[in-house]
Image (cartoon, rainbow, N blue to C red; front, side):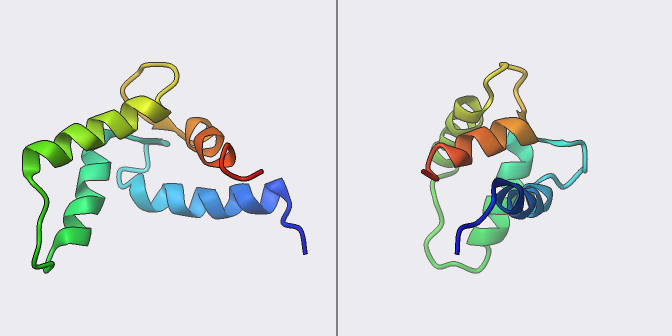
Length: 85
């Protein structure tokens, strides 16, 4: 059964909202960092903090098409949808 774009966007919105901790409608580097800190909490192997920060910055920059240092829901959807063909 095919999934409609509307259904995919609904599911992406749920994921986006999990990262958008301050409910600003945008994801910024600090929110991505919070999620990753939660993920690595309790893990035996933790990433190098400088490398992790660099990768977070690169990730946000890749998605941030209007260069405002934050990722809008549209930018997030556009990024994910390029892999759904």
